[in-house]
Image (cartoon, rainbow, N blue to C red; front, side, top):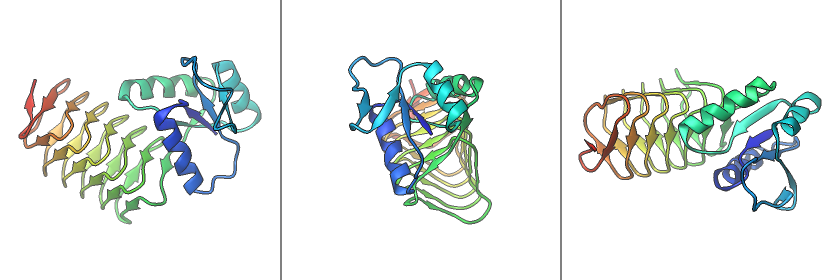
Length: 207
């Protein structure tokens, strides 16, 4: 298993694997940072090139998960890893509470500790649902979208692909956000917003 990234959020992904008693070898990947040790926590090898990652995929395990935020970056790195034979894997905390009826969680979704997902919810490929979020019934979370800690999505809401929802934001029932919408921390979204919009405030307004 290779975790993309070797800093902040990647360490949180590692914790989820520990919670799930994962018994395989875990590697991290970071080809940007110059301040990392050879091994994270003196235990986990940090791969520096795609050539090294490809070797792990070919000789050990081709699964990978995304340990960074930023929706577009998550998608870009996913494509790179798939192109060298990787298989995108979901990471779901056993301490998340997920309903038993009508839910669909696509490959590569990350669902962190304390999250509550009710029923009839779709979580798109590569979406990130951070700590202590709630997602109400019959909602849709688009591909590679990011929900920061403490976000609350009310029922019958639709979050488009590549959205970024800030910490503590609230989406009221029946709201639709287009693609690539950014919602500021603490915002309360009371109406629909189109693609490529940034919204902040209570109630949220486009800026």
